[in-house]
Length: 149
Image 1 (cartoon, rainbow, N blue to C red):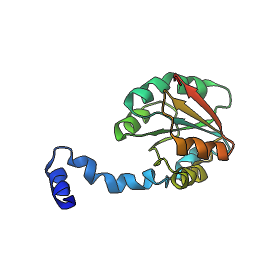
Image 2: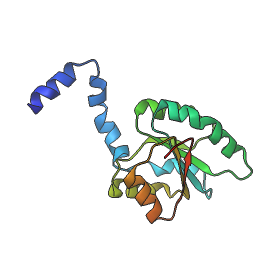
Image 3: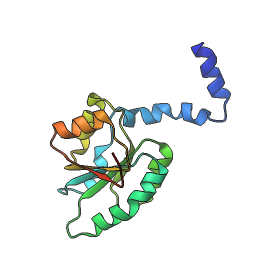
Image 4: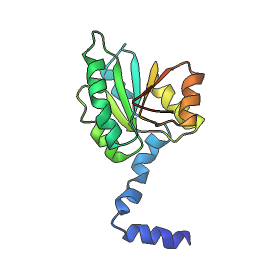
């Protein structure tokens, strides 16, 4: 059954999704290249989570205003989709954009160990229990932008 599914996916026009999994796996397990933060030494890090393209686009004005402040933080963006990450990378001034870690305490914890943000801004209603629990355990300030509960 699994072999048939794998063959079907490899023959599918969406096979790029399957073939890109090894590349994405590091980010999904919270293993991000924190060396990208070296471009902003000594600056606090603001983590913005925007699920996909629409949320990343919606976050752009807010991020631009944060970065226009005197002594702005470094801003990292996570997205659930590769298309969202590509859109986030177009936001001027962000330090980095990665795929969001899987929503479990170990993977989010690994991401937090690497990035060490002081706050997490969730765009719209992207509420992930593991992400929120890990943020609260580490004392991050958490905000919801353009969301509803």
